[in-house]
Image 1: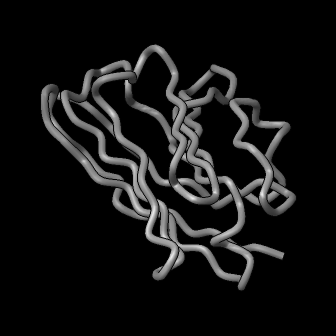
Image 2 (image 1 turned 180 degrees about the vertical axis):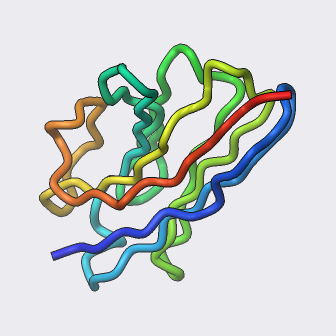
Image 3 (image 1 turned 90 degrees about the vertical axis):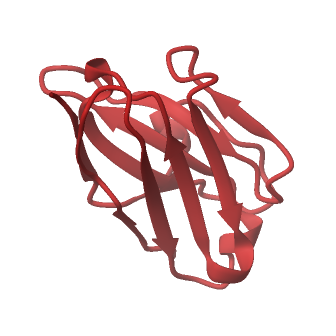
Length: 126
């Protein structure tokens, strides 16, 4: 069992930056791929970024590529999402998720993740 808790959301102006954190419990965190997803009002949950269990491989949605960076600190059981050059269309609730197995590849599908946090709101507005 893995529990994840997101933090770091808030209100930011267009062009600004935010850093989201995802703190995870469980001794298997360092062996699980992790992902970030987001959901805007009236829209389906969509993939943002994912990182392999070792941190050596990352994947991004085209809409955030070049602006967002996913990273992890396995010693602190934490995954980060650095968001730069934010746009109004980035406004959403951001969710962190953990893959169900260990030493598996990451996934860009919500169905590929079993453990989800409660989400953190990111609002980009002037």
